[in-house]
Length: 251
Image: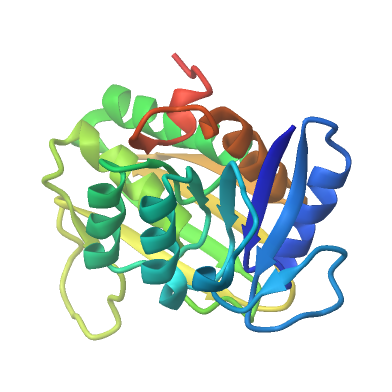
């Protein structure tokens, strides 16, 4: 039986992860970490340094401010960790990569199978269409989401940009500019409203035709189940940085 700790256990995603684990006979929650306790059916620790129960893996859906404590604990105890929180800075992502040299870390911007599929499709489309098409990415989320653009939008942009040797610039806002759209950019646009779980469109706009690759999530449960699958995958892995490409073959 895999013993899991949920970081951000009392948040919406933490509760979704716990519900997902309840239905899986191969993994169980032994503790949670959160500043608040909403009456979870397992012990909630307010900080990682207080944890006194053994665990095989950590699933993190918390806040970017908790990253240092999370990584310190994971490295010190050699506990594999699934990082599903978004909104990290480049410096924080660099720290995740550095810590992966000391313990196994599963890190991706989105744990949905569908999103990772459209990432692969967008990359293949960019390779086929070449620079004759302008690329724009539109992402939509609920009005409580803190970061913009979404980590998934950046992941999609990065997938396309790899095809062009990472030479394309990301343009997040054009309202202050009065100029034609240059060829060497990817436009990224954020919409926040209502209870939208997550929608992403990758638009390839060419001469007289437009190709759009889309994904829409109807429930946050798709992200929770993906994170649990990642936890089961990484639990016995050696130190290193892993993502969805390690457990799903899109080729």
